[in-house]
Image (cartoon, rainbow, N blue to C red; front, side, top):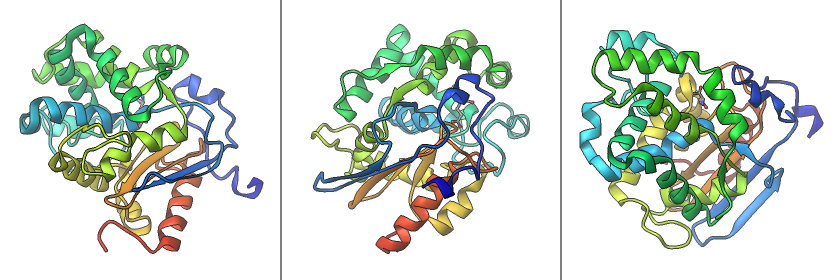
Length: 292
Ligand code: GLU
């Protein structure tokens, strides 16, 4: 493995993310029958970061359905995940739910519905779909995010100035940062994503969402899930996946398998360098992809 390390860089803008050993890698695949194939550092905990946006999208669609699209669009932005430009052009309407701005609006949507219980609802769902009752928010990551989240404060305030955030900015960001700070292993993450491969039903048979929502979430991952590298991911990997700055990439081939990779060194677009390479190799060797 050693020869593959050192080609990317850990995210440092959240200082606590810099505290992980960069030279780690895990790949886990779970097939439809529930067989688990897993290699590498699959029991090491990391923070879920942007992959949590898939879970908030699931919760938001379950609660408000199509109304969500009155608050955000469904278009790839072609910009970095922390770019403000599109928000100005769209009068405070995020381009898609997987940008920080979109996820902050989803946090607001969920806060409207669940109030003080929002983070508990999220934790409860994550524990249920991973089958891991011990999952927790990593307090060090959460605090590091909060004290260094200047751009996220800018997004939230900017969106609020257009009336597209209803709650107090501080409360909304608290939910958003806590969602991103959930600590889990690559094994947990792969189990969590099983419902997206299985028409909404989790590994343990719980109906997380509807088949129709699954179709939509997978489509959004395919078109917006990997920052401004979605074209290359679609071309080279060909699966609906969501990536994060902690170096995780999780996704599925609907009806066949769910897969996650984790390796903290990121490429220049913010996607896991090794994770991307591994998924490219996996779908090439399995000769499987979303559209063929
Ligand atoms: N918590 C991170 C942030 O808000 C998430 C970014 C990501 O993983 O894309 O900046």
